Image 1 (cartoon, rainbow, N blue to C red):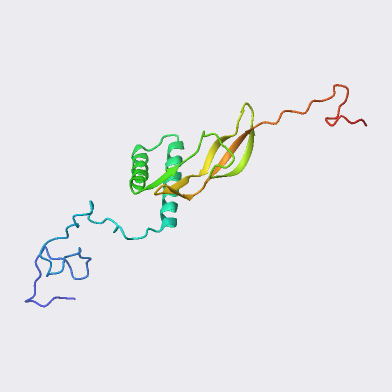
Image 2 (cartoon, helix red, strand yellow; image 1 turned 180 degrees about the vertical axis):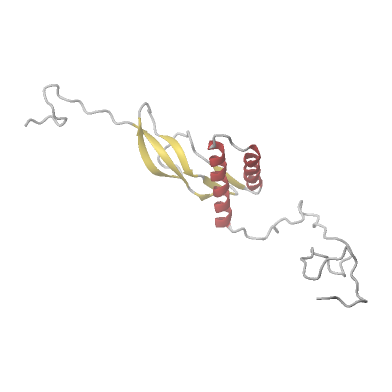
Length: 171
């Protein structure tokens, strides 16, 4: 298709079908400025209610990705830094992600023990692995952590030296 001869477009003009960047309405006297009570121009208004389930899901997924990145043979430093920064941003917003690896497990803790696994050499119950972290928003727990708990091995029942059966019965 040819263009009419008298209508030439400048070389730096954007074609009509191309995406154009946002332009302020003509009546705007100056570019957008943040209200003085907010630190960031795109901050969520203080009266907005966050979607807590979405925040918890995002935080859990970032936590999981951070753990997987740390377990790689050669962890990627930029990836680890970005995931740490994402968790730090959530923490700055009042969302705290807590893992429980290596903590003493006590009945009554706000945790879900998914598996109790006997471990030799333990003298108390210990969290071996965190499957899902605990998440707190504004100091209130919004997700209960799920953990694998190591328990002391049960001692072997004493065996009568004269029998072959552990129960002590005869044939």
